[in-house]
Length: 121
Image (tube, rainbow, N blue to C red; front, side):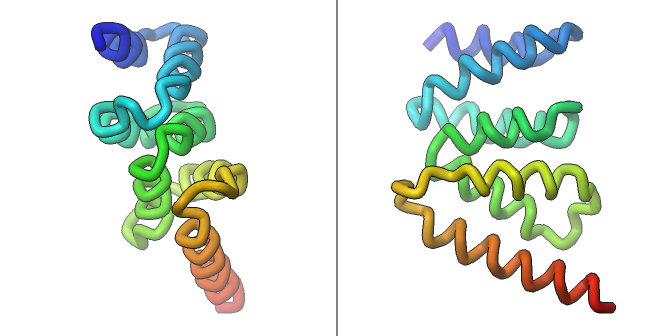
């Protein structure tokens, strides 16, 4: 368990290679520590330059991560388009054997309809 705390602490580094390596290692834990890692990574999602890498790590943390990503892109108060696009790209790589795949596909479909509606205005 100590390892996960060290990896999370490495996310505070000013060296981006350390941050990326930490995210890669955290993803390897899968859903094992998701109750601890998902909330922390969700906060970093908005701060990191490499939003897609953080979103990808969150996705690999299982069901809790998938739901957080869907909630984030569905939040109409979230103005960061780069963040939403990064999450959409990441969800496009979701595991089709995931128990949430129907939820993910449905959410992506609804979001696509919403975007089309906005573009027609």
